Image (cartoon, rainbow over all chains, first blue to last red):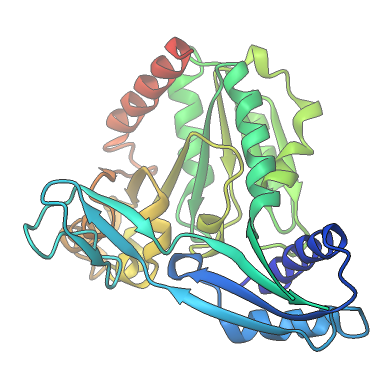
Length: 113
Length: 220
């Protein structure tokens, strides 16, 4: 729901990276969007478009991969997708679950000219 | 040209929250981020807690609301240092807003700081402000389906206070269902059933705070 301020944070980082690599324009950005971040991809795309309009990043594509919420059972070592936020091992029923994926919102790769 | 970049988009707020946390830790200050829907009883819980704990713990409060300083005024009546943040529209507090209040407190003279977040069962769960623990309140008048509908808040919290239990005879709410569903989402959740109106159940909550404050005092 805070996609506008997240888009702004994303753009600040992209600007920094483009400067580092002496890039003139941005073609695309690949993001990992963890399920637990509660980001709505369409909303993020829209906000990104609105802010980058008229800038050197105008027209850049946002490619988002949704990373599911993944758990690791510290009792039986099973790795599984956590559905409906149920932190319960589907194999042994243990509640000693470590979250091993789906919590991050990060840039993976950018394509520039 | 493709460039591999690995950066956390939320790093800006994470960094500020960590800086806040470092400052709190230096001062051995226990910090609680108190969250709930509007009207579930955050300020009432604080009034009760201050009354019970202020002889043992030096407390401070940061109040967060969109508008109005009514909550800060209530806390000021209880005689402890309080700062009101008015967000003007933002639906949650973040690390930046908390940091801006630091000039108003002397942290070395406090044992416990409670940040009363904006009333909202969604957004505060997504943001750290530098706290040691997130504590949430769910009142029985809100219904027993809230854990499954708002899982992130229940997942991120260390404590769930089920409030207004004095009203149970008048509402359709299964406390058993709330607890079962909440524990599926967060098996480590400490749950207390309370009434800020009658005072029932609050001693266990006070003991929880005393325990955490002691741990903090003893920490390196």
